[in-house]
Length: 286
Image (cartoon, rainbow, N blue to C red; front, side, top):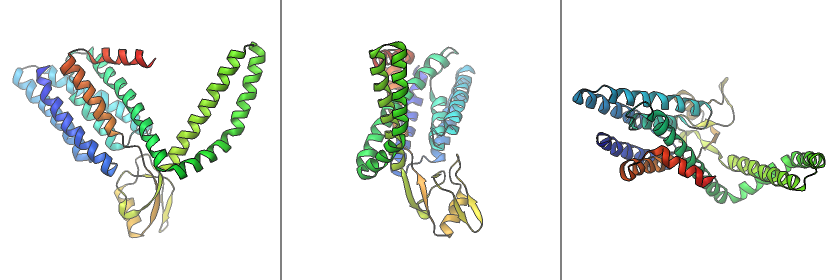
């Protein structure tokens, strides 16, 4: 494990800078992510040559490949922006895999920990966004509530029919509570989502920004894309002096930093498997 401590420190510095950049500009520069990947793999390659053990490098390469697949899925599922996905690949290269079983215990443990941390972070951020845009949030929430009220009433009618079939008042009450909570949660998420749509001057656009509405310039239609705006599209928008509707995302890199610090503390200070910590956390949450 000692040979990984230097990488732990490097990973922390890189992710800290990525967090600051994400909070300030809502993006993470490619050079920062690519340099983390290159540095981690180069370190593992040189260390492997030094000690004559190729596995040290191969485990790092396999960790990068596995997290590349996870990042790819999250990116195309529109959970992550490009910078977040590349940072996840870098963490895959940094993780201290030492045997094949750790791709499940350590890799899976970190991933579950990251999902739990990301969930808490997203809830906190969404609450902050709702409070910061109270007027817009309440307006959007009322619109969503009125739009989904019919579905809620229909669901209540269905639950009444089920209650008559099962003859259980407890089942009926719980179904109403669950349905009501689901509608509230859905309307809340949609209202927060709408608060994140901003009209932005083309001069302030950055590559990868998610376009919310299609724009037509000089006969060319700039469409919404999972990859966000390209630099060529941004230049066209700037030349035309356009303002466009952009959907901002929650700055997610802080969740990487928190998860990474927990991982390092568990592995380097507490000296036990990350998978054990995740099992404890899951028991607490359940």
